[in-house]
Length: 166
Image (cartoon, rainbow, N blue to C red; front, side, top):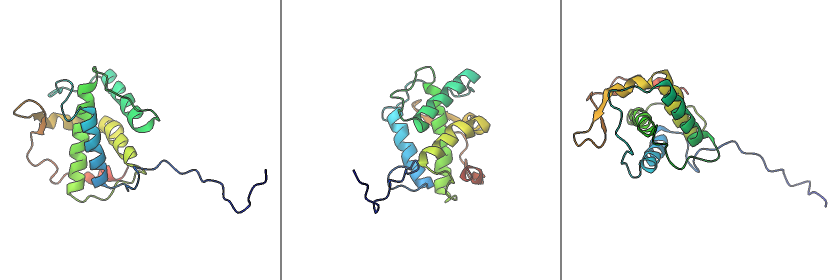
């Protein structure tokens, strides 16, 4: 079998973001919102959220592994382990608050190659660096079914540049 010299070998493409979506805060927000809805079964948390608490080292490790599978593996987890579900949701809530703030303030786009990379950086690396501290700024909604910020001006004057330099 003779090879056609004019045909080029298929070029291996780098991992792409979602098809047709460039890495912008607005697109990260859309993807994060969709992921939140899918993981919570239409926005209803599987367990009470851990307001006023911080995760243990063991819980943090299990959450890191879950998000690693979700954003980096070929096979994604089909459900959240009940033991860490409240902390998965806490991480997503804090991450999406930061993403919403960045999108609303026209922050420079994230430098990560893919939307999944941005969300991984925020839910794992940034959470473990400092974002876990932001969880204390959240409280239950009056109906007890969700989370809201205790501070009305959250995000105003917030240095979101740090989250744009992934």
